[in-house]
Length: 279
Image (cartoon, rainbow, N blue to C red; front, side):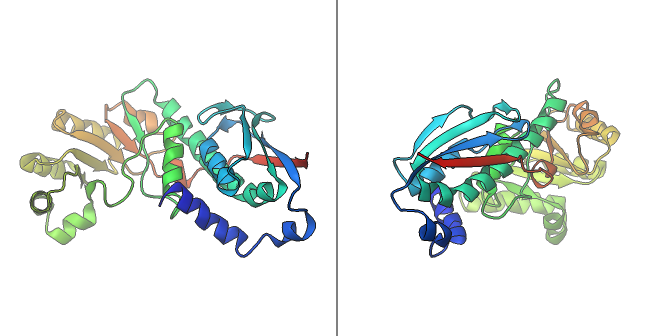
């Protein structure tokens, strides 16, 4: 889904056949100015999407930017002003706020995780635990906050998880069948495989032909053993139960990545407001 398609669908959901409150009470030629005010400290995200929403409704809407995506912001600061028709401001208001509040919340929480382990080589990854049809912007917010995207969906990376392995009949069969499928269909996709214990790791190493080994629900002590066993032959990713309280203990192991679904699904929206007046 393109940005324009997303905006059109989101406006259709909210505006439907018309913003009758505005149509009934405000002249179509009324002009206004809106100010996006920050009401809580954090990392700002969604500025480009906000501009795209206004310009979708009114190509000539005039923006003045005071902040940019990724800026650390504080209560009382102004992110942008926009001048347009009042009808445009009132149609765009809720969609802009919903998107920016959500994205800024994710960027802020991701930044907290990234800042915790800034002295280590480990990188923070998101997951597919996202809001349907808003994934692109949630993952964009992760990047703005200093994290990295694992994969966009089921189509851009192979991830052989426990269910795939169990249905397939084992680690060896899953890796073999996947490589055969990719070769037969001329698809160049990276392969990651989940392991649940050190024996699984040994079996993956015996077969090879993967790019990354996921170490799921390992304690930091067991993770360290697994990383030593892998010996840098493949990328490593820790997942499961990792949070702000224990992430340093995982980063100390030297694992390449930690994946945290919480940076998206536990994020609290940032408090923002869009104050408007006639001009």
